[in-house]
Image (tube, rainbow, N blue to C red; front, side, top):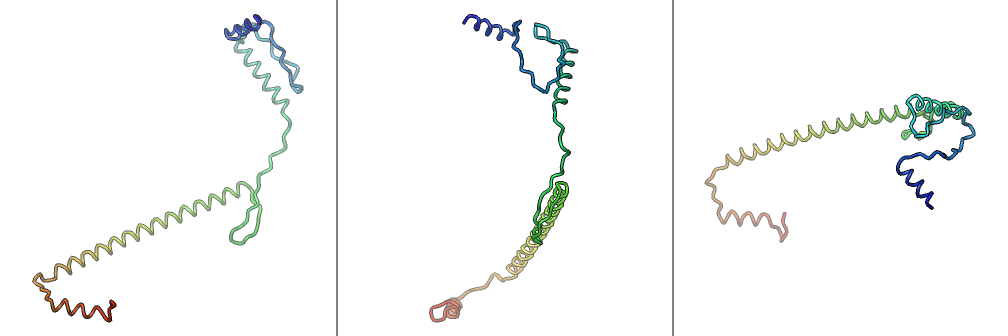
Amino acid sequence: MSSSLASAKRRRAGIQSTQQPNPVAPAAAPAAVAPAAPTNGRMSLPQLLNNLESRLKAVEIAKPETAPEVPLSFTVTDPETGTERKMSLSDYMTDMDNKFFMLAEEITSIKDIVVKLQSFTMEVNKTLMEERVRILSDVPENIKITKDDVEEKEETTFVKGSEI
């Protein structure tokens, strides 16, 4: 148990033991390996670069040859005709881009129409308000309503208990 405690202390202190475990080498890795690192665990810059270069070469050699890329294609149903057709990814993206710009233009035109409608409504309201003010200012102030006028009005508005 004391040897496990001692090795744990060495790991925590950053001290490398002289006995290193043997790494499992992949089957496709080349036989040439960079020179062994010094026992203190540090490599010089040229050693580190050589080590990285050898690892990259090993990965490139082990990489299997890939088949040429096949462009992606979609089966798209045309909403107007209902027919199906194949489209490549670039054609599909171009089509979607065109549709997006068409929608953006339509939204902009609807916005302009709403603004015009709002200004027209405001002008009509202003005209109606001015007309109301003009009519009310023309009414003479000495109008007197008599009781006979009110009774006459009531008789004309009610026929057989219902309102006209």
